[in-house]
Image 1 (cartoon, rainbow over the protein chains, first blue to last red):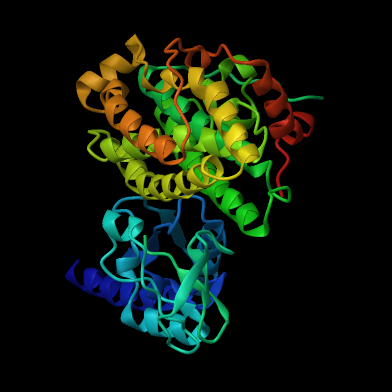
Image 2: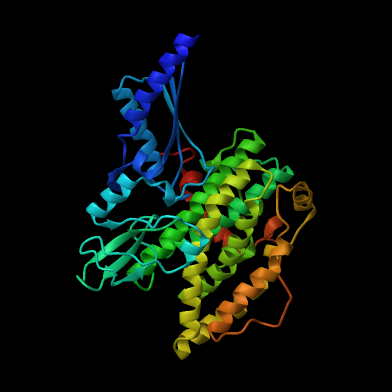
Amino acid sequence: MVEVKTRDAELARRAWDAAATVVDPEIPVLTIADLGVLREVDVTDGRVDVAITPTYSGCPAMNMIALEIELALERAGFRDAKVRTVLSPAWTTDWMSEEGRRKLKAYGIAPPQPASSRRALFGVPQVACPQCGSDNTELLSEFGSTSCKALWRCKACREPFDYFKCH
Amino acid sequence: MAAASIEVSETPLVLYTLRRADDALILGHRLSEWCGHAPILEEDMALSNMALDLIGQARELYSYAAQVEGKGNDEDKLAYLRDVRQYRNLLLVEQPNGDFANTMVRQLFYSVFADLYWSAMVASTDPTLQAIAAKSEKESAYHVRHCSEWVIRLGDGTEDSHARAQAAIDRLWAFTGEMFAVDDVERGLIDKGAAVDPASLLPQWLATVSGVVQEATLTLPQNDWMQQGGRSGRHSEHLGHLLSELQSMQRTFPGVSW
C-alpha cells in the first residue's frame, strides 16, 4: 500500500507538471498554473483527477482549457484523466503568480493589482502603462476584449493597452 | 419534428435555484441582443461581457438545479426545453431593451439587487449556492459600477438623455417590487439559512438606487404599486418572443450540438 501511495504521489507530481504547461487560449503567455486556474492534481491508482476553477462564471476558455489538459496528460502518458470544475473558493487575481504578473507585463497587458477586495474593485486603480511604465494613464472602458480585461490608454506614450482587472 | 417541453419536479430547492437561473439567463440574453448594436464599440463589449457573466451564472445554477432534481435533466434541457409558463424569472429582466437608457436603468435596478443578494448568499448554508454566490457577487459589483456611471451620465446629460432615463425609471419601477417578494416556497429555505430573505435587502437597495438617481438629477416614482407574476410563471407578452428566439435551434433540431 505504501508503495502504491508513493507511486501515486510521484505520478501526481508528473501529472501536475504536464497539466501546468497548458496555456490560457486568450492570453497564451500565461499557463493555467500562473493564473491560479489549476487548483489540484490527484492520482489514485493511476487515474488522474484535475480540478480547475473559472476566472469568471462565463469564461468561454474553460472548455478549451479542460480539453487541452486532457491532451497534455495523454501526451505525458496519462490515458485516464478527468477534469472537473470547482467554484469554491472563488478565483481571485491574488492567485496569479509573480512569474505570471511579470509575463503579462512583458506581453503588453498591465497585471492586476494585488490584494483584491471590494475596495480595490470599486476604487480607481493606478495602472502603470506596460509599454513605457508611465502612471499617466486613463480608463477607456471597464470591459475589454475578454471578461478578465479592461481597456486603458497611456497618456504619455499614447498607446492603448489591456489591464487585467482586479477581481 | 419539434422538441417537446420537459417536465420539471419543482421541489423548493429546485424551484428556488431555477428562479435565479432564469433571472440570469433572460437578462443575459437581453443584453446579448445589443451585440453589434450598441451606441459605441466599448459599450458593445461591455454589454456582451455582462451578458457573458450572467449566462455563466445561469449555467452554474441550471446545472445545480438539474443535479438536485436528479431526473436526468441538464443545464441545456432546462434552458431550451421549458415553455414560457415554466420560466420563473422576474418580470423586470424580460422587459425589452428599449433604448440605451432603458437598458441601463433595468440593469441598475437588477444589478444593485444582485450585488446585495449574492453578497448575502455567501453565508448560505447550501455549499453550492454559496460557491456560486462568491463568484457572482464580484461580477455583480462590477456591473453596478458600470450601469451607475451610465445612469448618472444619461440623467445629468442632455435634455433628451435625461428625459429618456426618467421615462425608463417610470416605466420599469413597477417591476422592482417582485425582487423583494417572498412566497412559501422560499420561506422554508430562508428559515433553514439556505436562502436570504430578499425583503431584508430592500432598505440598502433603495438607498443605493436613490443615491445614483439623485446624482443623475432624476427622481424615483412615488407610486408603490408593484406588478408580480414572473416567479409563478405569469409573464408579460415579451418573454414568449424572447424564448422563441433563444430556443429555436433546440426546438427545431432536438439534441443538436456542435
